[in-house]
Structures are given as structure tokens and as C-alpha cells.
Amino acid sequence: MNHANTVTNVINDASQIVHFDGVLHWCILISLFIFLIGMLWVALRVLLPLRRLAKQAASIIDGKLPEFDTPSSGIWEVEQLRRSLQHMIGQIKQAQEREIVYRNALTESQETERLRIAREIHDDTIQSLVVVAHSLERAAHPIKALASDASVHLDTARAQLIRCIDGLRQLIANLRPTVLDELGLAAAIEILCEDHPNLEFSVAGCAYEIDHAQELALFRAAQEAICNAERHALAHRITATLIYAPAAVTLEVSDDGRGFELPRQLQEFASYGHFGLLGIRERMAHLGGQFKVASEPAAGTRITVSVPRAALAAA
Image 1 (spheres, rainbow, N blue to C red):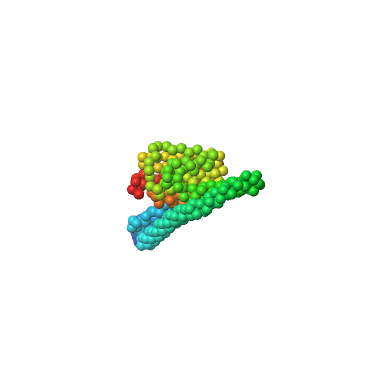
Image 2: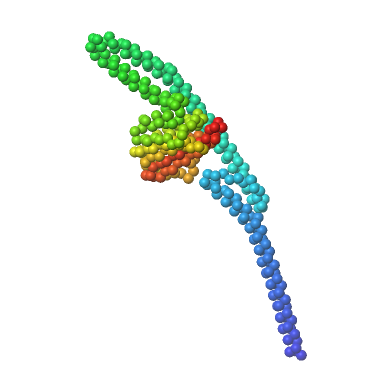
């Protein structure tokens, strides 16, 4: 009898253990299922939306401003982060637009001031100096008959005065290239290049008339590029090519100078002291054109600017 009771107790204990193991098994399965559902929810509502935002924001490093205008499928905090990024990008774009408008207005005011100074020098200073030169010439005639040393001094003074007048006329040409108005872009750049013995200039294509503002922008780009090549790059050979293509007018200036390492973003030109190049880039952008620069240390520099003909015609 005792033996039968023992067997019965063992069977009861075994059934309880099996029952407990079954409950534990189901609890583990349910917990694992809940865990997987939770991880899936975290991935869909947190990780993936954050990854999309991070991928969009990564382009900011390269100077691009992405649009965060697509609503996020994530949790409220992720959506709030997207809205904050969208607002921040909007503020940056507005600030950039205001800065571009200000710089364009500043450039136009500089050109206006250059024109005013050039006219004042031409109409006032140079004319006065020309009168003085004529007076010296007339005063020298009677003195020359006396073979006096004073005539030599008068001739020397007149020669120096003429050189001063020539220098002022060159200054006027740099301030406001009147030849640009009179002869056009190609002739103006050709005359500019005549003052640089190491420079070769050529024109490709059939020249046609373009808008004056864009002619002036291309001429200023030529001035800046040539100046940089001679003064900063210490180039021995410079080539400038003006290309009249059916769709655009392009100016390319190359040199064999020491070159420099390009920054990741062209806006960083300001930190390198290349304010002139930054000004060319902004002026080209304002006129609907393009600006490209290629350079490497000890490998020279090539600057290319272009404006579309359609924009010129429309202007």
C-alpha cells in the first residue's frame, strides 16, 4: 500500500513539473514575442525616421541645404526634430538670400562709385593737368632760345606731368573700362592683356552682343583672375580664352603658378583671403551664370566663368 502511494506521489509531482515547464515555456514565448514587437516598433517609429533625418542632414556638411518638408512617420519627438530642422534650414536660406541681395547691392554701388570717381578724374583732374602741361610747353619755347637750364627743367617737368596723366588714364581704365562700352568685351579683355607680357589671349567662336552688366562681370572676372595669377600664384605663363558658344559666353583663365588647395566649400574662400574669387562667384550666381575653379599646389590654377546666352537675351 505504501509503495502504491509513493508511486502516486511521484506521478503527481512529475505532472506538476511538466505543467510548470509548459507554463514557463509559454511565458518565454510570449515574452519573446512582445520583445520582438517592441523592437520592431522602435525600429519603425524611432530608428528608421532618425536614420532618414541623419542622412538628409549629412548633406549639410557639403554645403547643401536639404528640404525637411516630408512629415516623419516616427514618434512625436522625431517629428518635432524634423520641424526644427526644417525651420533652421528655412532661416539659413533666408539669411543667405539677404546676404546675396546685400552683396549684389554693394557690388552695384561699388561700380557706381567707380564710375563717379573715373568721371571726376577725367573731367577735373586730368583736364587741369593737361592745361598745366600746355602751359609748361608754351613757357619752354622762349626759354629754349636762351639755351637756359630752365628749359631742361621745364621739359622734365612736362614729361613727368604727361606720365602722371597717362597713369591717371590707366587708373580710369581700371576703375571704369570705357573701352568696354565703346568696343565690346573681347576688345576690352584684349587691351587688358596687353599690359601683361606673359599672357596669351584668344577668342573662340563668333562674337555677339551681350548685356552690359554681364560684360562688366566677365571683364571684372578677367581682371581678378589675371591679377591673382601674377601677384599671388607667381605664374610664368597665363592663358585667357573667351569663348562665344551658342548657349553661353565663357571666359577661362589658366596659369602655371603655385596653385593652392581648394576648400571643401567655396564659401571658405573668405577664410583663405580669396575675397575676389568669392565676389566673382556671387556675381556669376546673381547673373544666372556659373563659376568654377580648379587648382592644386604646384600645379597651377584654372578659373572658368560663364553666363548663359538666354539670360543675356532676356535681360
